[in-house]
Length: 365
Image (cartoon, rainbow, N blue to C red; front, side, top):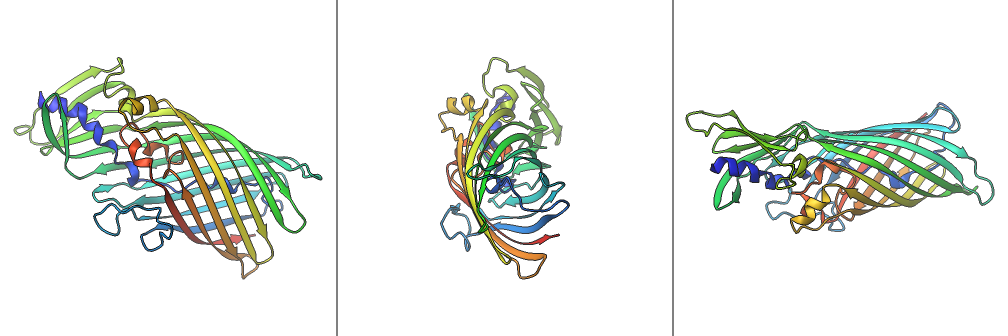
């Protein structure tokens, strides 16, 4: 049946997920000494953006449709509090998306972390801290609304659109941080750590000639097809369930949901006085994902590393209120920072560098 073949192949169009992206986790700015007394802390509110006008280094490649394609917009609230001299906690919420010609989808990201300072700096020996953190990206849905030709076994059909319902990911992470500080308000930090990650989604839908079918979910290795909406007089009414445990196309969990482990290391430099604060940091990440074997079988390049560079300049004209501008650059777009955006069918989209500019206000107490 042509519709049955098309439903199996429609998953190929899932290289559509840059529509729901969050900004980087900013781990490259971690320090073992946040610098706040007990029950003191800091909150920042920021607008995050990337447009052709502010893409000074040419990291954003134009899609050739119009000047706004590839624009990034959103914002976040991030704050931290010193519970004791050694215990620091923080949290953040991010909302954003990237504009593409036809796709849609916005995401919410939540982050939380707790950090305990194990030792005090003494001579050449740094202050050491252990940090436990977690974060989650979630989108209500991701939609590719442009016509997409799908074919297999001599059959070609056009899917009007495909939709992923409820894509999300969860990460847990552990880092060790070492910080060397000087009396002149300079500090240098090194960090290293790793974590685990899981990507899931609820259902995958395909619309063909006005008929919407559910194809499958991340809770099963089976490929199934069932008409969920449309005129029964015009739609092929099908209901099938094909076990795919033999690792044939499309593979376990449709090669969209998967688990992974990752490791990261990096360093940063910070300087501050009563009015100014400067921070610059670098982070390298490498990943081991169980979906990458499927990516390699398609002949696509596997992108399992990323480099992040972040710079920040802060100015505090008032005792408790300040302003900042921050830029973050990534070698392979959001590899590692947005796991739900990477799968067998979208892997080829992560070859390009990207950058985010954040401008905001910070307050301390």
